[in-house]
Image (cartoon, rainbow over all chains, first blue to last red; front, side, top):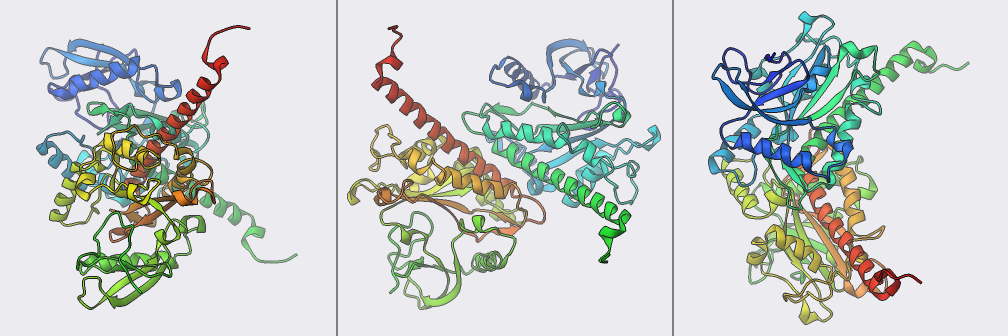
Length: 301
Length: 301
């Protein structure tokens, strides 16, 4: 049985008779092939990537597994339509908080048409892409109850400023800001989700190392998806924090050059997350010193 | 006594009655302040940088020392004109090979005017900036004799393709290509100039580490200058190989964000140089195995 995914945070949605992705209950994600070059480009990328023996396993795990293409009934009721079949990244999470971040200050490939370049350059300038090297495309943050999910509207997300991005990256790992209130985010999950040897930061650094060296692919308009799961707090120390790359409709051959556009944006995101973690440490030190009067006062025995 | 520098490879030249930089014989470089904002911006950057206590010494050495501004007779005979006074980086070199590389796939700051953006975007697309994240702005490569200096014309440099850039970075450290011949560059100085613990690569990696972290400045249209000196081969193992940053007319405040545009381009340049060094090692291994028949043949005792 195919259904519209509950947890989609960016991209075209398959609700209300629109063409959009579907999932089944065996962990597959079906993405309708776009009619223009984008569909065939994404299939070509997945085929090339799947069969490329130069991709190390510790890098491959950041990409959804590809199962080929299949003709299935489209979500808009228009009948059979070719779909990419891939791993449903979200299905292994019970209660996921998700953020989709489009990486790179430039979302247009060098040889794009003049119209394409001007349209996408405008989007890059109107969002945080030019300023930060990345932009948030969508997110949902779970609270302690289902009703407390914060999933800001697409229009709001598009207007995020640099300051908003910094705040939202904090809210993403806070327990007190799942509903969009004016409260200061407490960052109470930051060290568990972003930090640690298997957290988001460690994964992004692993990816960075690959991007410093790989000259096979250039990823334009590709997103880093960050997922974690408040329900798994008991099971795992890092809340099942996961990084995946998604959206490969604009991947080009690297031709012996590194993807400096993606790498620059990735390093910028990494710096934001490092700053949040440093802030946490300082907060915890401050709390500790408040609890320990000796640390807080200048008195002698 | 002020004179026009011999070894300028990029930028406006002070010859033939034009306004351009001058040098004296005590190691000072005088750069005429440009009338528009660029002059005052560059002075403002140097003043800010000189007095900023957050810049570590191992980073400061990549910047020319700043001595303030001075009114001196301009090179175009127009009378007294304000000049930036800074360290003449080249004067300590006897017989310098020099390359000026403008870093960043984007040479325009975010808040530039529409005209400025479109003009510079075009330049970035017409050169290798968009494709490689950097472009060569000028160079001179010394041969064994003065007459063998290769200093390609500005127009030729502007037309460099990605392939040309890769070749020119090889020619820069070769003994057989100082005159522009069709010969394969021998890369005979590569391991000495690019490699080693104090060579160009080590210096660029040091700079990279700073750019991964610093959020104070964003450097648009700024160049990495690579200099080495064939005459100093006897004195120093690495031919006095030096990296300096120059041209700060378009430096902006970082506002808590890393300079992902500069960093991406720098990483791309680093990868090119690493590839050349790997090529050298392979060449040397090949040569060694040719000299050692045991390594070259599959025979048993």
